[in-house]
Image (cartoon, rainbow, N blue to C red; front, side, top):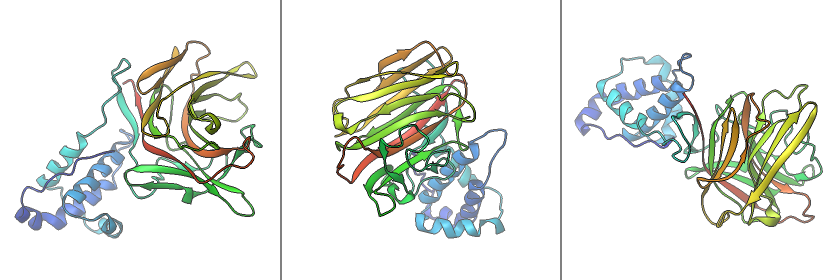
Length: 323
């Protein structure tokens, strides 16, 4: 979450209360309120911003966290003021769809490594490639953590040359067991790779895979061989059979700048929005069970000799729900 840096009230006050504030903020960073899921994480992010505002470098946070349990002072008024400022810097809800909305998930990728409280590597069913998708021979790329790089305020998903065991390395991450949900407005801001061979995607997958027909909402897929068009699909169960609907549209400049790709999943409809513009609506066969998010950058093996490396850039991923 992007958070403003609070300014200390004065150098003297900062010096006098510095260590107390550091310990107090680090204590806040460890809290979690079971009655308000996600609040502890939000507070921790605000605390980190406050520490930076107090002149604490990111490189020193790890060591301070390791020793924070020993110091449990009361939170000073300076910390309260510091906390109040960043906590107001919450991303605005979508203006193109009817609210009200409450922010439930937000990763702005402002750190130095992937947040393991939000994401896991590979697919949730244990595969680190296309195995289990029904397209084992079409999707190339074995997901490895070092191809998922968080840097400079964004997440970079790479596909690169591999080794003898895996011809290509890729990046696949997902939120199952961290965050899954039923209904909501899901949005990612992406810069697609300008590569004729890559297969970036942002999609939702049904949480309970055991003994059920698959359900899937593809917010955006880009088959690199035709990067001038972005594709959206909806896979849904009808009895014991999986059906698939979808189409595509053009997003000018998709590979040369940032664009938003979103889905508004409601009990009676699913609507796809690209750059805030409605591109498709499905009013039937709506799925009513929990789903989770997946981001990936892999290769399309229909291209016999893909050119690598290629990179999908992610500015943020957010989910809002109606209160």
